[in-house]
Image (cartoon, rainbow over all chains, first blue to last red; front, side, top):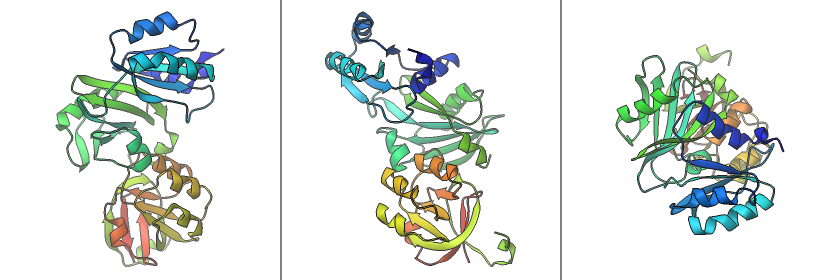
Length: 198
Length: 118
């Protein structure tokens, strides 16, 4: 099996390549062979997130955003048996300890952040529930546009922008800003963004 | 939009640039996803937001000239789709569904995120 064709897994590998902070993650291609690795990962964790990936399927794959650790193994086994590779990572609460989450779009001259406070980021994707938008100029990280209510001081997001300012253009990063730090968990291409005013 | 300069325009609303392009058309207020199928050529649809039900139907109606929504931004699924289909789209125009009335003649400037009444 060529694992490099799994788009979500590749995306996480890319986040690691850019040395961006990310939740602790393991990939499970074969439940039986990796059972010990799974046990080690689950040890001491109350909750985990289970996502999955399929070759050539960038869209819907089974996922359990919040799963209690004792219930995780049978679910991982089931999803794995259905032919999906499993992405197991640390659970990032959508309310407790979270400041904001959302997307960062890298444009040629600017960095655009679209954010929500609490709740799943899918609300932003699917329901358009954007609570704050910030546009930073790449060259000096000055805030050039702002809409909505401030979820945190601008300096906090400026520090996040610093981390991503050298990422290639027209990439969208999914991230969560927690009280304990910032975590990136997905990066995707958005070639359509070339047409946006920059 | 060749004759844009000759038209007297009044800014009605501003929002977020989600898909570029400048178009002129008539307002069509859309409340329910299925109504998208009845949108005609030259119509600019105004709706609270394009959730996945709307998007599925949007793909079936290639006549829509432009989109304005109360909610959303440039990284939402709806915005990416609008850019793919080259449909000018202004998102996050908070009062859009209240300000516009059916059949109003408008210009949607997706570059500036501005809607003008003619």
